[in-house]
Amino acid sequence: MADKNKVRSINDKPMHKIGVVLGTGFFVLLCAIIIFPVFAGLLASFRPGTELIRRGLAINLDLSTMSLSNYTYLFSGNADSQKYFMWYKNSLIITIVSVVLTLVICYFVAYGLTMYNFRLKNILFFLVIATMMVPFEILMLPLYKEIIALGLIDSYTGVIITGICNASTIFFFRQYLGGLPKDLLDAGRIDGATEYGIAVKIILLLTKPAFASMGILSAMGTWNAILWPLLVLKGAEKFTLPIGLNTLLTPYGNNYDVLIAGSMFGILPIFVIFLIFQKYIIDGMTAGAVKG
Image (cartoon, rainbow, N blue to C red; front, top):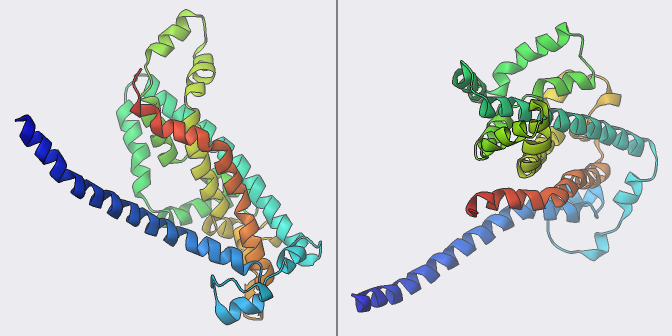
């Protein structure tokens, strides 16, 4: 019997190696497809806008056409530069406030649905999840009419308020909190902690990976959002970065110099957020793999 198992393991090794090679090749190809537009855009940001019109997004390294002129123009302080950084500031304000409020509200909603037992608990959670099945395009008109009724048109509040209670974020927090032992609540009560103290000083500290993951996803969604801010914001001085960059493309002239360099510089905040919180994301991915 041992000899048969040995022969079987030897015969399985080539198939295992083929599977590893195919899997590695697939993910390398997938990474190349994802990285290509970013890399091409980065190269294009060092070329004049006329080169982009002539050649499109190309990855050829022609050093004779590459320079820092686009970035120099972007930071020169001229009218285009001032508008760009005004849009940049608007996006930063909306993103920071929206992410903070979304994480706080969704955490406490998920905490209540997970840690406490009360009537209609499962029905309420089902209703929360059911909202994920409704496309935003269906909700857009009622939300827009509501924002008009509240007098929040052309304001940051009108952009932020509609997305701070996100069903997918609540679902993620609930699933993460469901993996924590409820004995922690009893231990906190025995030590004299209040319910609020347990939620903030004990449970919240254990959910850092969940906060990091949802923070990045929420920041990406808010930073790149264009449809809802485009409906709510009317004045150019309150435009977010995606809307502002879109205004550079007009039938009367296209400012590709600012558009490409500004787009690449616009990636920076999300990239920095990912670098800061990647440790917690990795911890969150591996937390369930080890049992102590």
